[in-house]
Length: 182
Image (tube, rainbow, N blue to C red; front, side):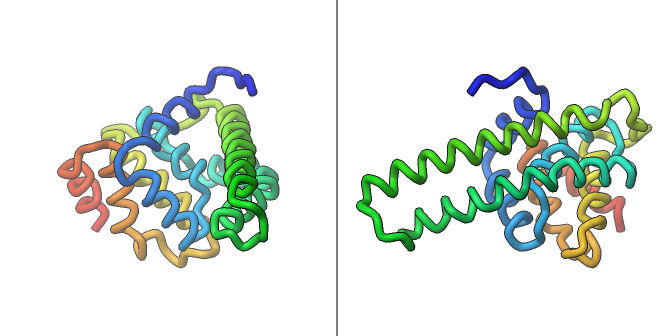
């Protein structure tokens, strides 16, 4: 499938390959119902030293919601096939998992294209004197605080810290940003 160029997708595929990013994002998705595309968006926008407000976050959530009705069943089907919960020959399971994975990744890509178009970065506020790590932290916390599944983003600060350390590859700067939160 040919997709238009996407700065968000390029950023996401680059950071996804960094050690621990995938694992931490999937923990936040599976355990706290966080949307990985929005988490990556928060970091991408934060890396540009831009801040998301409540209206921005609601627009992102509203944009992602219809896509989740496509992606979640694909993800669940892929996991079920990998666990061999459906009686099929191994060769068919392998091929089916590959096909479902491709559809899931394409849908994730389309979600990110939609996210990239819903808000114009020039409309965002800057994070001022904050560095990109602190800006990303504030964006992630604002997003996670908007979720019903989390009473406060503070309850998962260790996972947020791990994610930022994995993405920005600067544990000391992440710890400084986290310390300024307390």
